[in-house]
Image 1 (cartoon, rainbow, N blue to C red):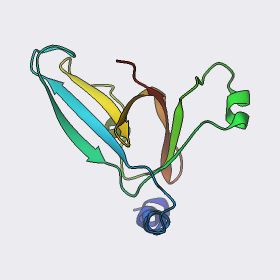
Image 2 (image 1 turned 135 degrees about the vertical axis):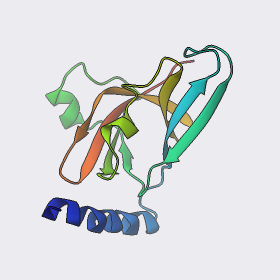
Image 3 (image 1 turned 45 degrees about the horizontal axis):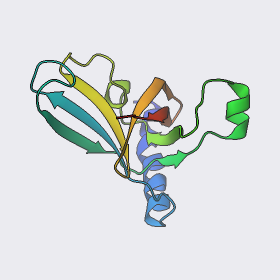
Image 4 (image 1 turned 90 degrees about the vertical axis):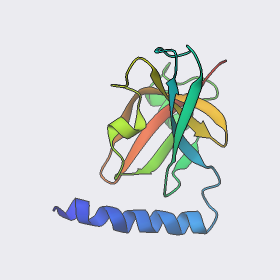
Length: 134
């Protein structure tokens, strides 16, 4: 074990405290949707949701972030960060799923998809999300 891995539960406990104070108002879940027809959109969908805990921070991309990476962000995009480092990249994005599965993010019931790759930092993950159109 490294010091970093030993500190991850401590950081998560601190994030739980922030959540307990009501400072993280959004419920964020990662949904894996499986389609009965053998391909995405074919047949009937069944969902398996994992609610992220402790609750991550959800925000719009800051003007500074938008200026640093022009053209990357669209109106309605969300940045979700302070996601526990106990999750893996495979837990967060849809890469490597079979042809009959898709990964969808839910923020208070609204569906989003991951743009790019989740970014791993020392004690957290950060993802950019874009609202799904139906």
